Structure formats: C-alpha cells, structure tokens
Image 1 (tube, helix red, strand yellow):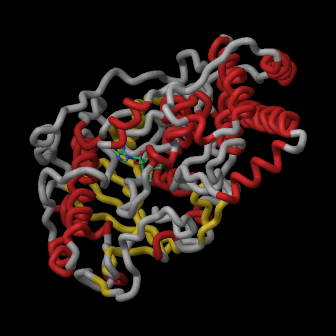
Image 2 (cartoon, protein in one colour):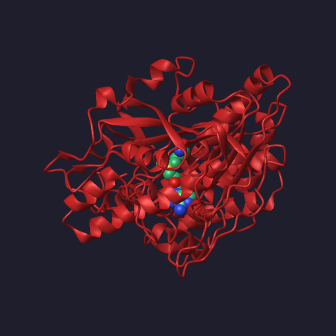
Length: 469
Ligand SMILES: C[S@@+](CC[C@H](N)C(=O)[O-])C[C@H]1O[C@@H](n2cnc3c(N)ncnc32)[C@H](O)[C@@H]1O
C-alpha cells in the first residue's frame, strides 16, 4: 500500500484523472454491498485473542476471514492461503476447527505462528515470566544482528542493552516464555531505534533522532524495561485467553495449521489438496513487506544475504515472465502511457496469478476461492482487480459466484497509524469463484521463470502441536 504520510514513498500512481476500465455495471454484476464487521458481530475487536501480538502491514480484519470460513467451509476442511502475511487465516482456521496451509515470502511467518496458534493446554504463569525478565536484566550473553549498518539505526548505549537482552532470550530455552519475550523485544527494538516506528518502511527521521536524544537524557533504561515488561505481560494474557477459548470451544476436533515462510508462492506447488482458498494478495502499489520488516528479521537472526534474496521475489518488484491477458486488463494496458507502469502492471498480474493458480489448482471440485482485493488506481485508471481475476479464472474451469463490496472505514494499516482511504480506494472486495464440478483444471504455472530459479517447497516448518519455542 502507498504510505501517503511518508516522504520516502515514491508515488507511482497519480490520482488526477480518474477513468474506469470496467466492462459493465456493478449492480447487475453480482456485487453485494456488505459490512463484514456487521456480518460477524461475534468479533467486536479486530485484535482479539492473539491477532494483535504482531504488527503487520495490510492485515486482514478477522471478520472477513471468519465470514468466508463460516460461509464456504465446514469443520475439518483444509484452507490454503498463499499470501499468509501474519497468519490471520491460520488463527481463524484454528479457532473454527479448520486446517490451514499457509505460505508467504516473508520469513516472519515462521516466528509469528507458534505464538498466534499456541497449542498449549495449560495457562501460562506470570511469575515464570517475571523470573525470566529479571534474569534478562543481568544477561552476560550478547547477540548483535549480522547487519552491516546496525550502528546507523541505534544509539550505542541502547544497542548494547538490546544485544544483551536478545543474547539472553536466544540462549535461554524457556519455550513459549522466551517467544513471548521475543515478541515484546521486537517492538521495543523498533521503538528504541532511530526508525520511524509508526510507519512501515525503515526510515531514520529527524523527529525520531530528537526523540531518542531526549530519551537518553532521561531514565531511558527503566522506560525500556517497563515497555518489555508490559508488552510481554500483554502477550502472555492474549495466549491465556487463547488457551481458555480453545479449551472451551474445541471439543474433539484438533486443527492442523502448517506454515512455510520464506517461499515464493508464484513458483511453489501446494502439496495439500484443499477445500477452500482464502487469501489477500499484495496490493498493486508499492508495499515492500520484506523491507518493512527488515529490522525484525535481523533481530530474529536472519542474514543480509537471506533478506536480499527474498526481496528479489517480492510482488510486484520483479520481471514478468508471461503477459496475462483479459478483456479488462488489455484495456488498461492500452490506456497506460508510461512504460514503467505497464511493466509494473504486467509483473503484478503475472506473479499474483501464478501464485493463485498454484494454490487453486489444488482445490477440490466445487471448492470456493475467496480472494480479498482492492480497486487500486494506476495513472488515474481504476484497476478492478476482482473483475480481471474473474475474467482470467472463468476461462480456466472456475465459475464466478459473487463479489462482496465492503466500504473502507478508517483502518489501521500499521501500528498506531490510521489511514482513512488507503491508495485512494473507497471499497474492498471479496471475490468468490467456485471451481467447476469436474476437475477440468488449468495448467499450473510452476515452471521457473526463464533464467529464474525454482524454489521448491520444503516440508512445513512447524505445526502447533510441535514445541512452540
Ligand atoms: C496483503 S499481505 C497479506 C496479509 C495477510 N492476509 C494478513 O492478514 O496478515 C500480502 C502478502 O504477500 C506476500 N508476498 C509478496 N510477494 C510474495 C511472493 N512472491 N510469494 C509469497 N508471498 C508474497 C507479502 O510478504 C505479504 O505478506
């Protein structure tokens, strides 16, 4: 998503002249105006249970996922999400006794999921957490990220303390308690750095430099400890609520949630036959998820090389290896005058559709594909994503069922920042496609890009039944 508040954001998509490139009139198109928040009144807090433990750009609101699960799946079904991000689909699937298979390019998924779908049966104890936090203050261990310009992002005295704290959690095998503290350390490491922690991208700002300078003249160490303490406690409480909820609601059915962060879904075969797809692809606009979460990835022990390699596969920052053609997309392509925008458009549709196609290939006959998209603009032209996807997939064995249109309210895009109208979009859409009754599936796009490298799927990292540390 475009960050309209950040001076760093390159605005590729102007909003001066607005024209529609659609093929028909919405009212007769199977578009139903809804409010997912109203359709799912049982969820009245988007951050309930474990949903809010990690901040992530452009997260699903859980109401959309819950609605899709209730309407298009049954207990025990398998759901696939090839753009899992922070795992909202995994959490909702677990809470609704469904199984899920989650993929994402971002390695954060592997760190997020053990906490968000914590499968412990017993309540966690505050006293155990406090003991660990006390031990951390005297840590002799040290861990500094292998990040060549880490010093650029921190005042030296703060970096020293954080290195000891991270050294402690990395060397203390206290299972889920260590993970709880790590989740707090991630937030604190960002808050006490020079980056603007309320915007997604890493950006050293004058405002933040001043704030840290001021902090260093105060009792900054106590403030830092206090923040780790209260965030850890908050996470512990969320986990306990999650344990209570799942103990009360999950009778005989146990969900299996598998995840694999660090894979390129455009060239990954989903190994599991599924009953539904529920996903939200990256936006057409420049949201760099890997770059936005770089600081977290470094602290979690990932290397510069790993992060650079992953960024190369991010949609839409790579070359298209085929040109997707549909009636609406072709019209837009013709209307575009800028070559760079045409390339961006081609890249976006090529890789997004490759990833969807890989996952949708594994759907059973009659299964629903629920795809949540916006209506972004490119050079003033509205790109009706749901219509383009419909045109593409109805040629390939899917039937258009309906589109839910949800008018965008003020929405949290990242952390505390609110944005009334992301990307100039007024609505978001949940497109429902239904796979044909006979398995007349399309050819999968799993061949590597010319000169490109296939990224085979490795075994899923962990399921909630394994140790969650
Ligand atoms: C809109 S976000 C999904 C957010 C998710 N629904 C949630 O609730 O957290 C889109 C995701 O697509 C991922 N992505 C971008 N390029 C990808 C690729 N080539 N393969 C797999 N995932 C990719 C990004 O890392 C990002 O997490």
